[in-house]
Length: 375
Image 1 (tube, rainbow, N blue to C red):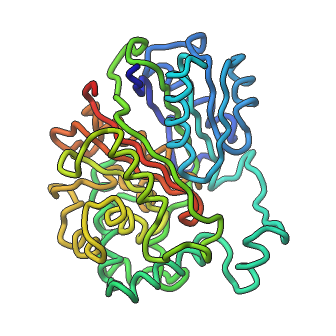
Image 2 (cartoon, one colour; image 1 turned 90 degrees about the vertical axis):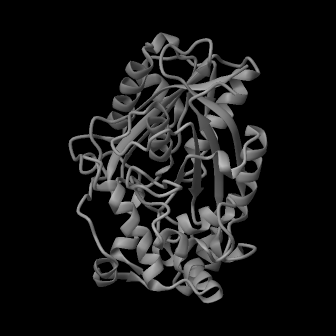
């Protein structure tokens, strides 16, 4: 059975949405995805989402009694996991059409849960006492080790933000669109060494939804799932096997490429989760597009920018487009748009797109290989 993404849409707006609660963001995204797929709520018999509200609450709000639910919550990569799990459920006959939703009032915090960290948690016991708490201070550990071992310069790290702003400049929905230079990045506020403000993801409101089903049930512009992979390493960053590479990125990427039966030469477009500027660098290397220590120069030389040979994060990414807290949904959305030829910054001739999601601080990872042709 061939699995497709039959519908994909975001909320009407992303950015600052103080008039939207978290539930409203889920429902608005679901409504838009159903319209995009030319389906109704009566076509849906599976629900997947993460966080609060969970799949039961979303199903109830939509008036659905689902035959299958998935509430897998592994951070920002969760939605890639949901696509993979939905595909398996459909192939197993557990359901026929799955609605995956995301809504997060990350900036306005309307209806959002409280931030909290248990003192008995692994992070609370083994990292917090040393001043490591939250993404900015956790991700510095990996970035600094990578810079030391590979020679990545501050200027090369800044080039990631510069390259992605070039894409955002072409996207009317992007939160930040003004072109920037390396000097602008390095002159922005230092948040946690070595990260400057422009090397850190946005904090926004928004949502998105996907409809996953079989090719036979799709009604318009399906995007085919050629392959997928998922992996996890450690719930805390201090227990990574190697701070300079993500085991999850490598393993999930290998699984997805193997299932899809593709090589790197087949990939026309790439979306790599970019909570901070060094994450796309890890993605390029761990997926095997470049060698160890080569990604910084690869980006600085313009290969991922408009006109480059490997277009990367073409919506502007979490650094310039939007980042509600869990970004993976938006990476998938942009991949679908590129494959349909509907993106704001459309890359010519995109036939195969790879999406790599990160959850937590390199804790989980998932990879999707998508195409606009039947496998």
